[in-house]
Image 1 (spheres, rainbow, N blue to C red):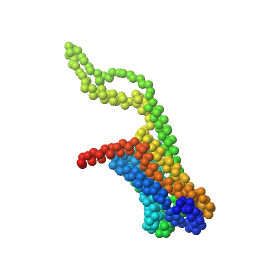
Image 2: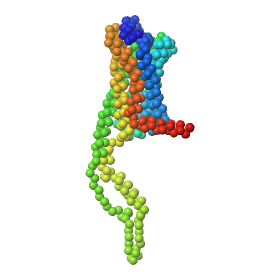
Image 3: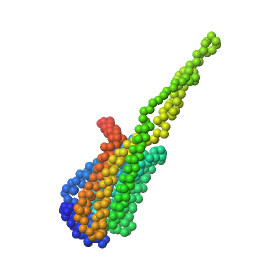
Image 4: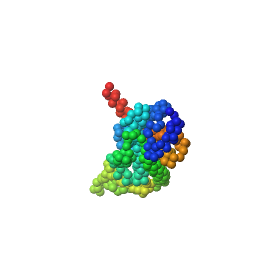
Length: 369
C-alpha cells in the first residue's frame, strides 16, 4: 500500500476517531522500498553511533564535557533506531508487545534529542561567554548527572498520560492530543536551540575580533640596563681585594629575566586579553554547523503534525498536509546518521583520538600475535 492510499484511508477515517483522537499506529503500512531505506539507515546509523561512543569512552583526550554531550546524543540516536526497528516488527509481524512499546515511546525520543541539543548549545554558550566560571565549575560528572536528570524528567513527563492512567497502551493507538502537546514542546525547544546558536555565533564573532586585536603585532622598544646583582665584580689583588663572581652560574640572570618577561609592560597585548580556549571555540563552531540543520528541520516536522491535529480536530479537508507527512516522518530518521557523521568529520579532536585508538589497537593485536 502506497502513501496516497494511506492518506485516503486516514482522511476518510478521521471522522470516526475525531471524538477521542486516537489513531492506530499501523494506519500507514510500510512498503518494501521504505523498509529497505530504513534498514540501510538502521545498519549504518548503528555502526556510526557506536563508533562515536566507543572512541569517546576509550580516549582520555576526549574526557571533556563538550564530548559527553555527543555520547548522550549518540545513545538517544540509537534509541531512535531501536524505535524504528520496533515499528517494523509491530507492523510487519503484527506483534502486540512491539506495538505497545512503540505507542509508549512515540515522539519521546525526538523530544529527548532536542533537550540534549538545547543543553549542549547552553554548554557551548557558557564556555564562550563565561569561560572562567565554566572552567572551574563544569565537570564531566556534573554533565553526566545533568544529562541523566534531563533524560529522566523528559521521559517521565512525556509518558505521564500512560503511567498516570489517563491513557492505555493496550489498544495500540496514538492519541493526537497527547502528541500535540509533545510537538508544541518540541517546537519551543527548537526555537531555544536556534536562539542559543545565534547567541553563540555573536559571541564567537566578538571573541575572534578581540583575539585578532590583542594578538596583532605591535612595535616594541627594548631598554637594556645592567643589574649589579648579575655583574661579575673584579678588584685589584694588589689592594687586598678579592675576585668575586656573584652568581656566576647564571641562575640569577635567568630568574631576573623571567621576572621581567612576566611584566605586562613589556607585552602589552597580554593586558585584558580574552581568556578563551581555541578548542572551546572550535567545538562551539563545529556544534553549530552540526546542529543547526537538525534544529531547522524541527519546524517543518512539528508544524506539519500540528496542522494534521487541527485538520482532524476541526474536520477540515487538508490533502497536502496529509500527503507530505509520511515523507517528513521517514526523513526524520536520517538525523541518527547525520549528527554523528558530521561530528566525526568536523571534530579534529575526535579524528586524532580515532587515529590514536586505532594505533593502540593495532599495537595490541601485534603484541598478542
